[in-house]
Length: 487
Image (cartoon, rainbow, N blue to C red; front, side, top):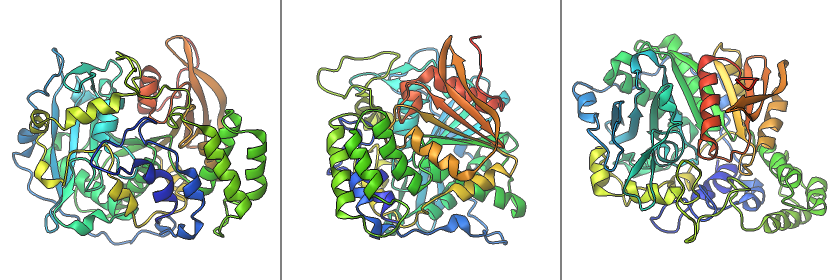
């Protein structure tokens, strides 16, 4: 699909030249809601989530892995702080040798890896890097200092409680590549298949994790990536003749799940957070029908244009955060609006690329946070993945959706509207949860699904509220609701 996908989530990562996606407005750069909703004729999707998967297993490529784990081990990252007490690995897993398609990963083990679960992290976009975003700016063990030369230890890194794989997916994102140019025209189905092939091969390379509890998490367009890959794993586990992946749970932050909920929820979020006027909101509600594939009326388009103009020059990823500018001071152990610029510089340093075992000849230019070409050539996406999420809730695995409440890109309101469509029964009513003697957010437990908000967090929850994000993640791993008291 080239409508909702390209014009809502992907164009925010388009770049005119080979520079980082992160701009003055944050991770994605700007808000293209108006363009997205003006293009219903492009809303053609491949609704594969509503189809039964093939009953017969199609074998995936499994390549030789002998010696590759040792080759992938990182001796030390340039500029890393002293006292690193966990192992790190990075490199490539071939998913299609004929096409020359290989996916790049960075793996941060826990301090006690044999006692911790295995977790896969996926950033969204589509076309955005889990290394540059997730690992270097959110939940990874390190953050990059101003200037892009040194690293500082993230005290709230998620590898404190789990072994974390950061996967740059699909091919064309970050250091991942293909020798076949047509592979860069891709979509949901192919991305899920390649991610599955990656996992099967990675587990051959790291066999000690084959029987370990496995969980997946991610944000934004991972609202598609995660449930689609989870469905494929559960299906193939039943009929595969190789490693069964021990999937136990999925957690998605500020996800994109449903096109109608996204549209209605976004403008309602703008209004309830005083970003647009009563008159503009009333005009949108009265003149726009986001459940229809018909072209929007002129009146609808006019009010959409007014809404996007009225919001002004803010970071849509966090409506209360400062923008990056030359006057922004360096921040330590707090959110820095220029942080993506630092990681861009760091990951394009030859010594860093060498330490990561990155094949820079496989990518056409410098490493980028987001690849706009991938997103603009995305060729399949369902309008909704809610049927998939409902399927997962009945599968026995733990399903968590969480939302930073200051994000306007994939807002808490859009997620709540999507949840309403699922029609789930409440098991534990809405309550305040705590961390560090403060309200960390709010939670509600449905039958087989938990929804959690993170107070004061934007689109990239661990960037804005790292302590609260770690408490949420640890609760998810323990399959316990976030703590409801101050202790």
